[in-house]
Length: 343
Image (cartoon, rainbow, N blue to C red):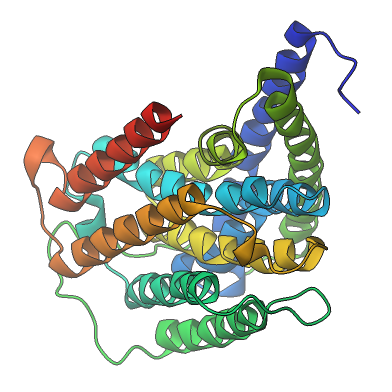
C-alpha cells in the first residue's frame, strides 16, 4: 500500500498516524476516568481492562497484520517489545509524581494481582517455544491456554478489586480513587462509553497504517524484523499508554495510571494469541528467533521488578523515585543497547 511513497512521505504518514494515536489517547484517558466513576468499577479495574485494552488496539493490529503477512518475528517482537516499553513509561511517570514514589502512592491489591497474572501469561510463550513444534489448525495449544488464563485472570482480578482480602498500609502519601461529585457520578455512562468506542476505532485504524509503514521500513532499509518490531512499532503503538499514564498522573488518578500500564501489558499478551491464529505457516512460537525471546525475557524482568516495587512501596528512593523505577530504566536501556549493537 505504501511501497510507492517517497521516503519523506513515508515518514510523514508514520508520524501523522502516531500523532493521531497520541491525541486520541488523551481524550480516551479523560473518558476512562469518568467511566470508572459512573460505573463504580474503580480506577484500577477500568485502567486495567477498558483503558489498557483500548490503548493496546493499535498494537494488536500491527502484530496481527505482520503475522498474517508471514513475518512472525515482526508480530512477536512488536508484542513483547511493547510490554517492555510500556513498563518503562511507568518509571518515567514516576519522575513526574513529585509527592512520593508512584508505586507507593497508588497502592492497590488489584494491580498486584495483575502483575502476577502478567508474569504467568508471559511464561506460557517460553514453554511453547521450548516445547514440541505442534499446531492444530495452525494454532499452538499454548495460545489457547494463554487466552483461557487471561479470561480467568481478569475475572479473579475483578474479585480482588471488589472484595480484597487485605489492604495496603495507609500513609499520608497514599492516593485513593476519588470519584466525581455525587451529581456527576449519578449521570449515565452511555455517552462517554459511545465516544470512547469511536476513539478506539480511530486508534485501530492508525495501528493498521503503522503496521504497513513498519513493514515497508523493514524492506526498504534492510532492517531486521525484531529491531523494527521491538524498538519502532512497539514504541510508537505504546505511545497511547505513555500519554494516558502521564495524563492520569496529572489528573491525580494514580491507580488508573498504574492499572492502565499493567492491564495494558496483560492485554498485550493476547497479541501473541491473535498473531498465532493469523500466522498460517504453523506455530508462531517456533517461527521466531532468540532476539524475540530476548525481549520477552526483558519484559518479564521489568514486570518482576515492578511487582517488587509495588510490594516494597518505598516512599522515595534514588533521584526521589522508587528504586524499582531506576532499575526498570536501567534494564530497558541495557536491552536497547544490546539490541542495537547486536545488529
